[in-house]
Amino acid sequence: MVEGELQRVLGRNVRRVRVERGLSQEALALSLGYHRTYIGGVERGERNLSLRSVERIASQMGVEPLALLVEQAGGSRDEPVAVPDPVTSTA
Image 1 (spheres, one colour):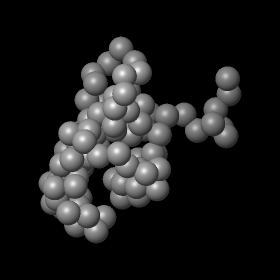
Image 2 (cartoon, one colour):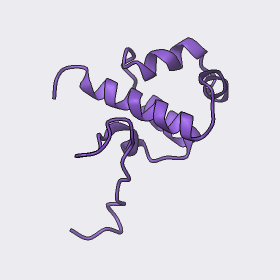
Image 3 (cartoon, one colour):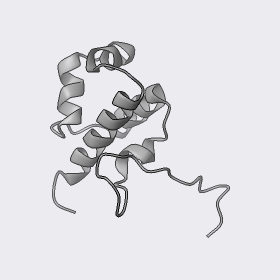
Image 4 (cartoon, one colour):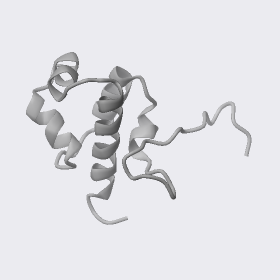
């Protein structure tokens, strides 16, 4: 993976889920206590988020944190993937 690619994957997934939920950047930012420009930076892959921030954003958007960090294989780069629950899934 190229340096910074995970930030861009996260940003694409945050944007996709936000749009699916019908939220503006400002509405999402307000619900998290962030500034609108910070969310824009996240979506552009310019921000290096802590894992706590990823968890917080995922929780607010109703998705698993890992779903924001994983690129869908063979699919659109704009869609987050469903991540199986490691406790209940069998390998």
